[in-house]
Image (tube, rainbow, N blue to C red; front, side, top):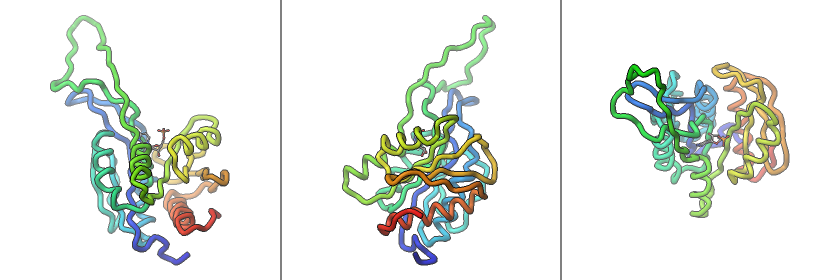
Length: 225
Ligand code: C5P
């Protein structure tokens, strides 16, 4: 592989959490600092790719040379991603997308009515961005190398393997527990068709660089390391 293994390629990365509004003041979200996704965007750029980073609400600087689109909700993230992927060669979904959103977003702040009764919230399922993208591009018979992430509290290997197959993607990276949000390092379990391979605990940028090489190898028909 060349020192710039993604030269000439376009990469789209989702990162961070999504925020699903309940009213103008409140909402639900997931824990996610966005650090892993931002590190992958940076590593892909360093590897020569043109990178679009679709970011949920996070407090992180944009990596140099990366195009950033800021979004809040899962639906906005889906729209921004679908706008970017038709020109892309690689899609890496690191975002911690909220699985559900409030069924109704109140136009005004929901007020206590003095009765002591708490409101009952109902939710609807959000779109699965990775699944939608993988299916859409497969239907178009386009070559888009999709990578997913998985954060699990237990049975990581089994869940990661099942998730990779369910989403129909070649590569999935599982966060090896315990779940440590906002940390600068991480430990990953890479799962592909051949099996599973552990990347030992390291700074997220180093893991991101390794992951980029693993993606580039597979795209050029080489086996994973
Ligand atoms: O299904 P689960 O949420 O565990 O899968 C995690 C993977 O799917 C991650 O790559 C995440 O970014 C992606 N995902 C997504 N849209 C969702 C839920 C998950 O893109 N609504």
